[in-house]
Amino acid sequence: MMALENVGGSMFSNPRVREQPQPEVAYHLSPTLSLTPPARKRRNLGMRRLVSIIYDFFSTPAFDAAEEGAEQGNALAQFNLGFHYFDGRGVAQDYTEAVKWWRKAADQGYAEAMHNLGLMYAKGLGVPQDYVEAHKWSDLAASRHRPGKKRDDSVHDGNFLAKRMTSDQIAEAQRMAREWLAKHQQ
Image 1 (cartoon, rainbow, N blue to C red):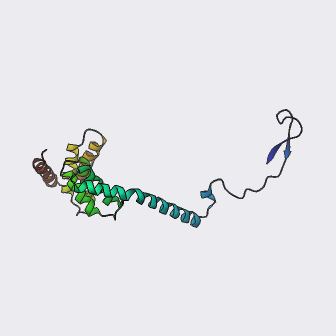
Image 2 (spheres, helix red, strand yellow):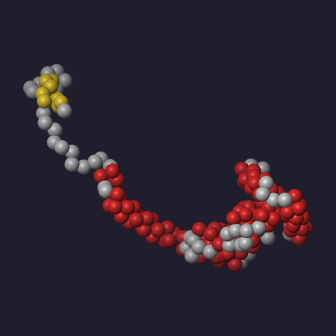
């Protein structure tokens, strides 16, 4: 490699180029690139553990607050508590509990909880897989969401399910949605 050397005067007025040996670079600029795969894996596991500790520090109080509000009947808190159980934030992951709290929020007309119930029934998470129930909840969510992405997602999910259902199943889901609406008019 070539290096500039200043020999008398300003380096701009009188530069001379001279061959100088460069030392071997013993490290990479990025520590991730210089680590061997097992060392990188150990480093990532340590970082994940640190993030987990920080996450738990903030999740536990959030879980406690959501639980308190949910038990008082607050639909938003019930929805959030369902997410804590779904993701295992501040508590052990439990899909059945997530469904329980989302159903309570949905019974109060909370559209996002309805949408999540549709997904849980469609995938069979915390409940037996049931496309009729999933379609019912997707329809209800679509009817409650304001126009926009969330409504479009609920409509899309309902259409996706309808392609896997018979016309009798779709009619049953629509009947169940009408009954739910009549029972929960607000």
